[in-house]
Image 1 (cartoon, rainbow, N blue to C red):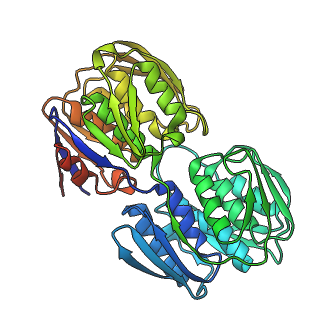
Image 2 (cartoon, rainbow, N blue to C red):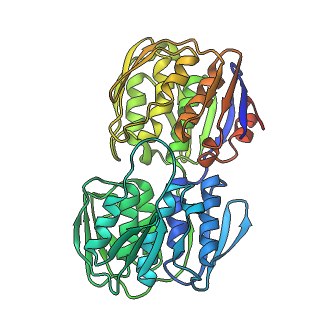
Length: 418
């Protein structure tokens, strides 16, 4: 397992590009199981999670060729198996997204129970309940979930929670069903919308994307296409926080600020302004003028839980007391003890973190407990005095493409060590 060695306090400036969205790429890759033919996907980030999904698709019999830095040719000449094995699915929770397209295309799927980040309980009950309402029979045995359906029939479904992967799985299952499926309380995230746009380009009939009521009119056949994946809003938000804490001399390129409205509003409340020129964003910020604030994470379009950890580093630098209330995952403050090791003064009561600043971050040996926790510790290390050793970086590399090289290009002193 590798680690990052970070020497903090360096001046950062230059252009920092944003990669394609991991959380849009994974369902779109899974969706190539739904129809035979040749696909071309662009703006695919080079990430561990993407590698796992590609291996999973190859396991099903798809042929995948990298044709450019972030572009892939995917050939589906028919599926060789309908089973997703433990050794791949256990690595990454998003692997469960293959169940929807397998059910749609072949009426059958057998998928190992999913794994992923240790950030709390993320049950798949909503997926399974939705599949059953569409007409599938579900069985759980020997660590696998099996689903079968002779014909999926459109149905009006209410999701108990606006789960992103649940919404995506049910959209993919419903596109080839008979009749109309309506998903109420659906996830509104841009990544869900991107999957819907991809399917519509394939010939699906999906409306209501970006709202909590998505309508899917089943079609008889879908056709492969070429598609450009949206930029990663969480990576963009991470970089904007880094820029705000290092003087604002970084230009973040490849940002869709419409996907970050609530995040932008909260940062403006703190005292951060944005200079936006197309897809390029530069932060205008003076740390001395920042004001504390209270934030609640909520499903999109609310404040993203995936930017909670990074924003806590920002709040820790502000004089006064701020609060961060986490409402999405029950175990997502595991980065707080690590930040406190670096000098922060953060106390946790239930699902609320109370942050008392300002903090003089000091380098220490710390551990990335999950993907976003790792990102926040990279930021803390870059603004701290002396050296930070960050362990368990495999979590970070699941979600940030070539992070070391991109940070080095803007002046950061960071290196990877085995």
